[in-house]
Length: 128
Image (cartoon, rainbow, N blue to C red; front, side, top):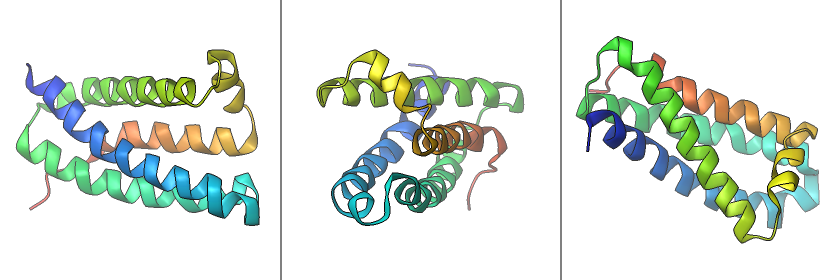
């Protein structure tokens, strides 16, 4: 397995796991009290902060030339969206419903966070 694939998996999987746990809390506890948009607005910074930390470790463990960092970003985003889509299917959403959900304010904010997740490894320097 190439360093690019290893780094994309090592970056995406822990961030997805945390986002899944936070998403469960968001849907069951926070959104009913605050509404979906505020609930997502509270979740996104936490996920992006973890993304920043994980990306620092990943780019240190699997150093890629700067020219390959955009490929890491694209692959990580594709993996994340695949995992998100499969999760939506597992919870009974159709692919169309999954895509339409991204057109709501909360969904658009979540998508912006996912794009931010993808950009972080292209910007992040190795952590010490």
